Amino acid sequence: LFESNDYPLLDIDIGAWLCLAHICGDTEIPSPQEMRRRNQQQILEEMQSVWRYNTDDNYKAACDNIPNDHWYHNNLSEEYFEYLAEWGRYQIMVSGRYQNECCYPFQFEAEQKPTDFAKKYLQLYIADSLSRYNLKKSIDGSEWRTFRDCEPSDYASIHTGTKAVPLKAKWMDLDDKGKISK
Image (cartoon, rainbow, N blue to C red; front, side, top):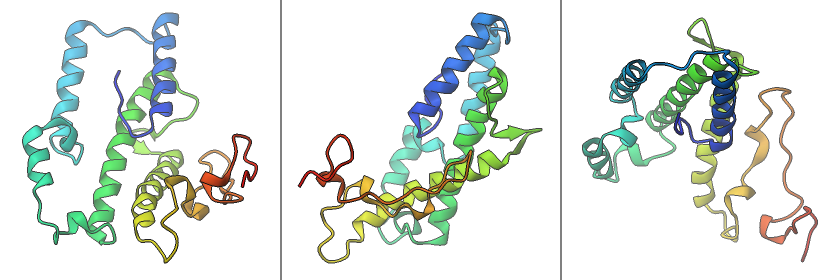
């Protein structure tokens, strides 16, 4: 198991559940041949997805040389939005396999279809990705913003639906307990 998504804490948790499932005998440890087969299958899938950027150095170099006027560099374009969505769907699919294997408390896929959790997670992934770009589109005097100062209205718990609330002040003006320090 290696990082399969952009959210390492989720990856670590799924990995811990998978290790526990192997230790407790809830899921069989695959043979070395089966592990190789699964790894090869995943690499073949990656070569057919936008995740290829992380797998294929030639593809990465080609993407890094795309001209600046291409949609690839326009995070407001419909094409870029779909690119992000494909990136997120692939990560969710891979995480979903591991979730299914270890009987994780919530699942990203059921009967090889995305669950509501997966759909909500994808929305969060896209909002998170775009929020960092939106910070660059500074309104006069907002150069102080960090990624934690993004607009929270697109964020909600995938479990409860509870919406995120804005910070009480600029991130850099908060102390370790969330109180305004300046």
